[in-house]
Image 1 (cartoon, rainbow, N blue to C red):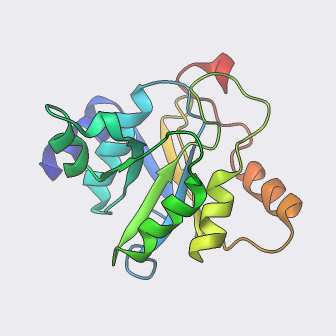
Image 2 (image 1 turned 120 degrees about the horizontal axis):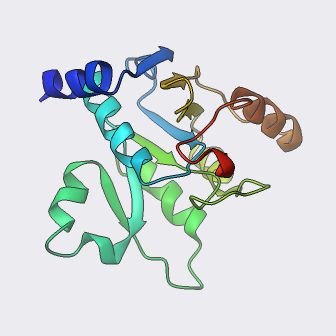
Length: 182
């Protein structure tokens, strides 16, 4: 399967991965990975291909209804964890607790929270990383340059504004599948 993923990603699609190409997998077993810009459903299979190529176990959360038959088995197999999204739930706490129950857990999130154009990121990923005591790894979905750029692990500080400025600078100039949503 890895050979097929490599063929599709590198040869058929013409993509490349740059930067921290192994996501620091040997030294960082737990992290929040933020993927931007999230403009299309195509982002999901790009991530799955890169997951297979790099050998890095990554995870995602989805509404618990997605994990029912017939798709539940598949979503769990590719690293999915069900999340109860009913109102009144502290989602940051619930997601941060997932890090405690796993030996290896790299949670991939899209800070934009949607595949549409947004002006401001949602902040939940940041508070999840802080609560769980894990670094943030930044990951681009750059369709213009056909590349995924991966950052070194970044540990949030006590200066949220400076942290967000630093993270946003990593994604400057990156164009998603739907450019007007980038």
